[in-house]
Length: 189
Image (cartoon, rainbow, N blue to C red):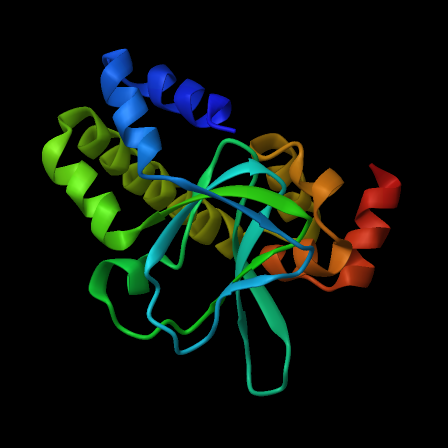
């Protein structure tokens, strides 16, 4: 259950096996159903998730009931409602599994304990934050001048597995285009 997490940690830092084992001891396995909500709108997020198998997504729902996907984490990735996790204020989004998933979950208290006591874990956390920021910036600024075709090409280039794993509706909401436009573009590629 911890093989992927151990590989993730070891691929990002020089760390002793005992420290990797200690880190893993704070993560608890969680098996979920498809479309299970992990964090609800207006809740305060208390957990960080590592995806062993499956996928989680972060999304919002506007006043008209339209969902907008903001983030996806697949196997070997971390995900949470980060602003709420950090500042302990109610979240304005939902965190959901979109497939039957096997996750490793760590509490906020344990997560920050590891950040404070294991420098390599703190470095991994900083890397997660930095890479997340860079990806978000590329997506935001890259999409500002892109037409629908360019957005789809961007996602294929930057996240090649994305369109194979995520429904057209979710992918379209992430890209900021309609599902029918996405279908039409995919059929031409």
